[in-house]
Length: 174
Length: 216
Image 1: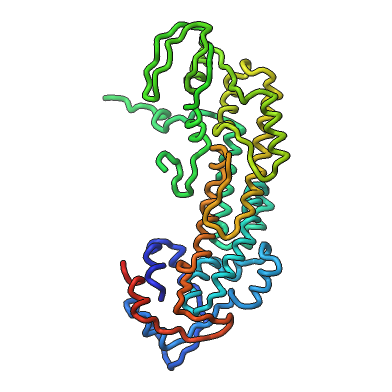
Image 2: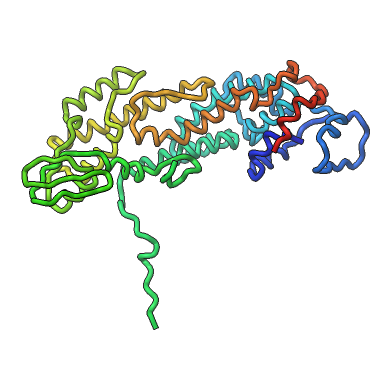
C-alpha cells in the first residue's frame, strides 16, 4: 500500500519492510469481515473503502513535546522508524505539516547525537540510545565507529597485521 | 571510493589514510651512496652522502629504520609556526588555519620513527596534539550549525578530520536532503493543505500523477 517510487529503491531493505508493518488507524466506510489484502491488488481498491487518519506518533501531543525539548523526547517508544514512517505516511494522509515537523525534529536532535557519539562513555551513551529512533541509532553508530577507529589509531598499537594464511602450519607433503 | 575498507559507511580506516599520507614528500639527508630509484610515482635519487633530497615519506621511514638517513622535519613543523597556528585556531572560532592536508598522519609517522631528528620533540608533539584537539572540537561545533542544507563547505580541513566526520556528515546531510525535499517527502502539489489531526479521505490520484510512480 505504498507509492511505488519509495518501494522500488529499498525492495530488499529489511527496515523498509518493517516500516510498512507499522499499524495505522483507519476508518472503514464499507462494512467488511475478515479482510484479506491481496498483495497484487491495486491500492485504490482499498483506499476507496477506508480513510486513514494520522498515526498517534505524529499527533499534537507528540509535536508539542518535540517543540518543547526535541533532544529528550523518547521517539523510539513511539515509533522506532519515526522519520521513515513519517515520510511514507505523509502523502497517504495528505498532511504536509508532517514533513516540516520531521525536518525540524531532526535538525534539533542530530547535534546531540554528534556530541554524544564523539564524547560520551559507553554507560552514559546506553541511556541516551534508548530514546533514539532507528535512523538516529545508525547515525550514532556511524559517528561513533569512525571516532573510535581514529582514537585507536592515535594511541597506536601493532602496525602490522598478519595475514591469516601465515599463521597456519603447512600440511606435511606425503 | 575505491580502496575503502568499509564503503558501506563511506569510511577509510585511519591506517588507510596514513598509507595515503606516506606519498607526501619529505627531505632526507642520506648517509650512503645509492643509484636512482625508479617508481611509478617518479624517479628518486641518485643518493649521495650529506646531499639533501626529497623522497616519499614511506621511503624516508624505510631508510631511517635501516639507519641510512636522517629526516629533515618539514617547514611547518617548527615551534614558531605551530604556536602561531595554535593561536590562530583559538582566536578564530569560525575558520580553520591552513595546515598541511596530512599533518596528523605525517606528524604521527615522524614522531614514531624519527624522534631524534626533530628538534624540541616534546614541545612540537604537544603543540601538534593541541592543534589537533582544538580543530576537532571546532569541527564538531561547526557541524552543529547545519540548517536544512544538502551541502556544507568548510575550508582547510585535513584528511583525517574529514574522514572522522564523514560517516556522520554524509548520513546527516542525506537525512536533511530527504526531509527538505518536497518531492521525496511525497508533498505533491495535488494534495491540498491538510490540517493535522484531520481525518480525510485521500483523493484518488489522477493518471498524470500516477504514471511516473509506476515506472520500474
